[in-house]
Length: 102
Length: 236
Image (cartoon, rainbow over all chains, first blue to last red; front, side, top):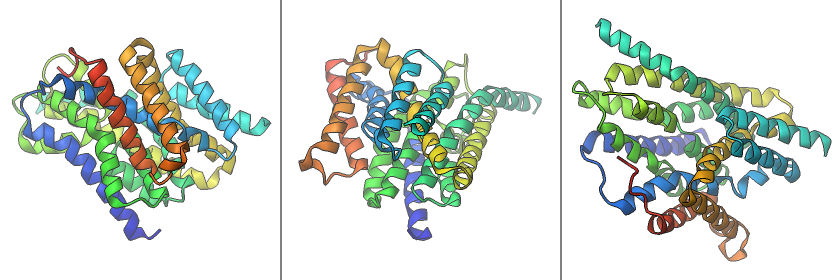
């Protein structure tokens, strides 16, 4: 892929992301009153992360079973209430250990 | 002047734990970028201009699939839409010295963690405090991406692959604890994941790219949950 194309991708990402952050901060002085819109925005991050993770996490490594074990470790650690960094570290360690052993 | 400096330092201190977390997570993101063949400079440029884990991970997926720029813009819009709500919520807490240039600058640094720290701080927010709060996380996020993308070349491929899972580990750590406590979030997560599998595995949907698939799943699941489990107390 050409550098120009990459810069274009990154520019579009940065511009959209900045506008989303900037416009409400600059333009709005009131909060949204619609319960539907507020609820929708409340759920969006969770829905996005779920759809980004499943099923894609299973294809993040060449060995699908290593990725499955990493995923399982992440689920256990997260349900156990561990911090983001701890969950991420154990995910990688479990996947690596599985890939080396399988 | 003294007071401004004091506020900046207080913000910087509050930003230290965020920055440390970002350093680790963005290391994994840098490796993900490297794994799809992105050059180091592009990964770093993306992180310093975007400053968002889920958005960048999705952006990397769109680039890997050579998606269109419209797909890229829409993906970023849906995934990062939550920042609009956070920005909106923060406007209620900005103090009288928060002029337009300050708003234009500090809105760049609204992330999930920066938002969480700033809303939980008692009283109003001043521009120096926000600059302090944002500065170290930006540094941590960019440095981690640089190290990850650069180390991706040096590490054995298997270690690189395993570290690429870090970003998913973080997503799971963000989603599951609240899903365990809240029925609405739980249903939303399960539905979105199921829809995502349908789009991935049912042959008739095979033309839909990953970026659009994420948008579809998230919008359908969130809209349905907003009807079934409306939130009356959030977004104050």
